[in-house]
Amino acid sequence: MPASQSNLRRMRRVTSKNPRVHELQALNDYCKETIPMTWKLAIQCSPHPSCQKGTCNERWKTRLTSTLSILHIRINIIITLVFLGLFITNVFNIPVLTGDKTVSTMGRLGVMVYLLRTNQKGVQTEAGIHGRPDDETADFVAKPSDGRWWRYEDVHLLGLLVASFWVFVVVAARSPHMTESCKVRVVEPVTRDIFLQDVQPKRQPAVLRGLDLGVCTQCWNVDYLREKVGERPVKVHVAPSPFMDFLHKNFAYRTLPFNELMHRASEEKHADFFFNEDEKYYLRSLGDNPRKDVADLKQQFPELAGDVTIPQLFPDEQFFSSVLRVSSASLHLWTHYDVMDNLLMQVTGYKRVVLFSPEDVEFLYLRGDKSEILDIDFPDLTRFPEFPRATRYECNLQPGDTLYIPALWMHNVLALTFSIGINVFWRHLPTSCYNSRDKYANCDAPDATRGLSLLEKALGALRYLPSEHRAFYARRMAHRARMWAAEGSSSGGKVGQEDEDSEVQNTGHEGSAE
Image: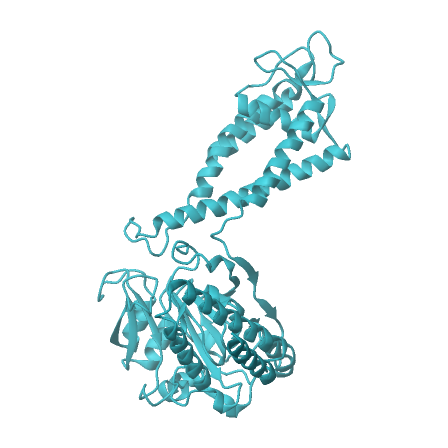
């Protein structure tokens, strides 16, 4: 900001010559010029990935509202902290030397605020800015245009009121667009014992650093991979929008030579394309026969498997699959969960991963294993009003990082740059807990599938009841489900059969009595 810097230099030069006369005028000019410029920079955000060629899609209203709400809160917090600090300096009588008088910080700032709001340039008098011509001993700070002199006590009270107001605004105006956010735990260094004793049992995601992932983190670049794999055909997702939506299938499957995929995925504008020059590419490697085989790096990409060292954090017999993932920059992968524990090994580029606990599943609007909420940063709260109640766990992955994702944790992945990673899944539960036909680690357990099917039938059985009765019994079912979930959490996943039997008996007894 050249203009602001020159004004700041001018302020310093003027105040060094005659600080008593010109200080407030210079500060006033500097603040009047700098504050609007700062606001412009604050509200000017980078183009969203869904904006193409300078025009935004239908999300722009939601995005603007959310951005302004977030900005409003952050500015309120900053101003509150500033006023709180100034008030503390005033209470403890911490002085600020101004000219030939010692003025409290709160009083000095109060003068600045007042002059800025009334567009005053300061008062030049024989006694300086801190007195009146007819009474140099009085403790006054400034004379506005109406002739009324402001005492330090008045300014202190003004500052206290302003600070109290901002505290109230911060508390009362918490934005509903923001979910509570937590940083994912980072564990470094990591050994097998540390992982098995301190990470996996907690059932919380963790960024694991210091693991040996092999030479892939040093040598896997576009030219190396194009030469290594060559023209082997691979099936990829191609999307005209950065937000890839599996539920509504806003992408198409296309087959490309691997070297061509690497070229297109690593560039931002495409000379050759299927939909448009800004389209995005995503590779999720598959088994040789996708209906029968799971993905295995050693089978599908044997020339690359030697570059990769899979961390030995689980028994070899529990291994399920190893998946190669390639993403264009700014690609958003839909929010989903897997039924197996897995490691996301970041090899090339950077990713942001946002995760949600299984305890927040009711706020994620799931259809199957995928969430209907496509844009988790600026969600449509008219459609998803409960989403802000979910807690998001966020981390940024760099080359060499490994993210542990426990089963059933929903996760959303954004490729911040052209990105290559390897996903390793393993069965951490007995084999009976998994669907034998699952090839992607995302099929619910057979018992869970049957339970969800019975739930749909139970809800369907209420369909022909009057609306009041239907709502009543649906709430009873929901209450019972919540009790069941709470009992399962408190008892380590085992729910007593006696409670269920007693409820059935009580229900029958009540019915006969009626």
